[in-house]
Length: 385
Image 1: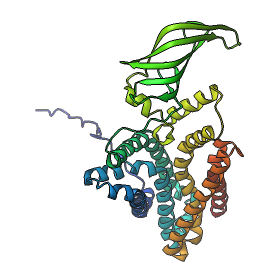
Image 2: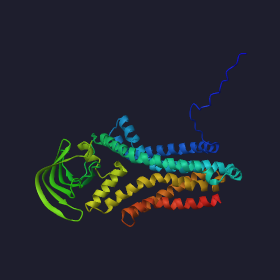
Image 3: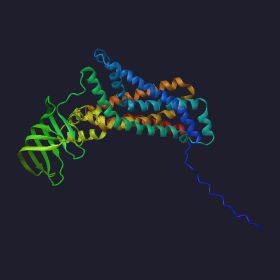
Image 4: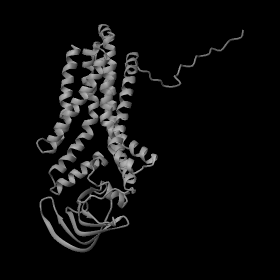
């Protein structure tokens, strides 16, 4: 009698991994996408038009080629992300959740046992993602884009892509820790006056300060003429001044002399947070202070505070939408504009206090987030109860 061999079924193995959002999150995300995208596009358009009108007199009189005009405007767009993303989060959340509240969908969800915090999970995650994305763009893309836009503006108006060299600037080499101070740059862009270089201690316990009345760029090195070298310890012990006929110090790794001069200018918008922090430390070590230093501190703090406003916008918009959403979209639009105006009014007021040394600059930059964040958290708690 013939027998039939048994055949074992192969275990089911998934051929690929697929991730799907829960139905609730997918539904809310679709509601958010429309008003968020519309408000973001509207803000970017407003920013471009505003930049154009501010520079229109120079550009029109210079008979700028269209390609340069477009490049000038587009390179200014990344600079507005810390303002555009919070507004889009505020506008999108107010309109999306306002619509859900108006149609009693939030009430229905809560009645079915879903907590208000769970309903709000998607916009809260959106605010967090926008904070990270806004910070990344503002800290990495915007500084380079602003410099390119400024170069384009000079190319249009002054027919040169070179930026002006500002006197008395600091520059830190992140690779070596050396801090450069240059009092003045002569017209040849290679000769510098009143140069001071602070070197960190590496192979000995002594730190060095090198001073020279004149320095000349030779290749990738800065050649200091009749330099005076002073070595000292952290305890205050020093070796005194030693006169040397010549001292060569390498420029920051990978930078040309044009990059060394122009990225070190006093335009804080062309520096990322690391460069800003280095310049602040360099000015503090040299005894520099006053309003110029406070402005840099404000700018550095706002590198973090302004993008985080995306998260604050969602926190304050959710309870407002749940409370006033039934009164229609018009109120949501009005609340978006009003809250945006209030936030930046508070920001401007406290930034002025920080610049005038009436308040710690770092704290002053975060006050608007603290005020609106606490207000949003209190309202959120009341709605949740």
